[in-house]
Image (cartoon, rainbow, N blue to C red):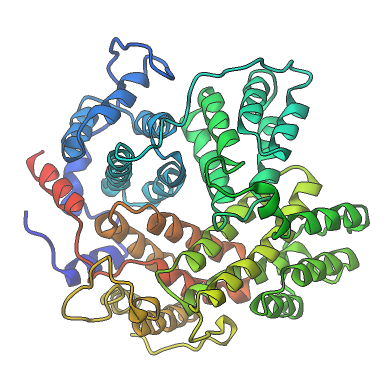
Amino acid sequence: MSQPSRRRFLRTVAGAGASAGLGEWAGLLPLSPASADDAKVTPDLVRFGPDIEPVVRLIEDTPRDKCVAMLVDQLKKGLPYRNFLAALYLANIRVNFVYHTLGSLHATDQLALDAPVQERLLPAFWALDSFKFHQDRGKKTEFAPSLKPLTGKLPSAGEAEKEFHEGMKAFDPDRAERAIAVMVRTQGAARVIEPFWHYGARDWDFIGHIPIWVSNVLRALPTVGWQHAESTMRVLARTVPCEGFGKPKDQVMKTQPYAANLERVQQSLDKLPADWAAGGANPAVTGELLTLIREGRPNAAGERAAKHLVDGKARAGAVWDAVHLAGGEMIMCAQNTAEPLHANTAANALHYAFQASGEPANRLLILLQAVSWMCLYRNAMIRKKWITEPKMITELVAAEIPARQEEAIEAILAHLTFGGAQKPKSDSDQGKDDFHQPWRQEGAQRVFAFAKRFADPLPLVRAANRLLPLKTGWDPHQVKFSVAAWENVAWVSDEWRPHMLAAASFSFSGADAPDTDLAKQVREAVRKL
């Protein structure tokens, strides 16, 4: 089977009948799941049950270059997608860097749900390959498996929740892990999960990874199944205190806005209007907060947000608008750098935590932290001299695009990765041009025009997302970023959605990006089916 041309592929993904046309991935359709074969297993650090354990071991033990054939074989034997996802989820927990690859499973699951049926397994192949890359890299480091047998005396059921809070406050992962194991065994899901929303939003250290991991891991858990909650919560209890990052936590926390925002919560909570957490635009308040974020003033931004909420001048929706616009603006100012990417994914994770939490105090804290954190991201970019060409997301202008939707999508995606360069750059290139890509700015202007012209931007997003499993290498950041960026579009007020869709375009892969070796392996495997 020959690889389709860029034009033919783009016409397929952009066309209204794309989901009905089977295309080159039609061979995946017959791989309907039934059940995983039982197998006799031996005890290890963690054991997950006879329906999942054999698949976990298969994922762990199969060499990376054999994984495509292994997964195809298991699917042909009837392995359900959910069992595969659960096994990969649990393999991450047991043997690997649980952070990035585990945190990306929610994103890959979303890509699968939104893809045409014949392509829904492509994100699964990508997730498996990314896991194996990290597993191979982990074998060369001193990192040990993340989940080990519980040690020490477990607290009583009555003391477990208090003990968990004490462990988290002391940055003591052993204490927190023992407590959360008891909580999972004795309390309901909502009560077990709630404290993680608070502590996930506490620590910006390591550029905001903690809430990203907490939100994404917990979002994937319902698909995997609550029966695996204890293992998941234990890993989170060890991850949230940032064990092993090498910085004294009391020193780190003094430089962050958590204590000040926690005090604001205590002072403001009883004064808030009943509808403070509702949506609703307020351009004046959003603009004021965005200005404070651009100026890098975390305490002032947190203080103003709290005051506007207490006074009833604005609701949470207007504050979230400022948070998301600030993240989108940062990726416009500098590409391929850590801070702007994580500003967008952290904003997404914190907003999800705000929506999922049932405790008003936690919800207000999360919102104030999100505002203040955007200042920290902005300050880090300024300190590293990455904002040499400031962009204003609120001043975006539309570029010319073709009048027909299909042709507009093709024009946007055709050269988005390399800007029409004759030869793609190496992934290791980190020069000034790699941080400031003019063709990405032009692409954002086209996307802005697309969102203004067409009432439904979903065809563009679906076309871009269908490229991700084919064009993205082992790094989970691009997949997490793309899914989060699109979700952020839906979470802002209507008037800001074209701006946020334009910012989301910086996460898209272009049709000019080469297919990965993995995509070629999958294509060959499908050809042989």
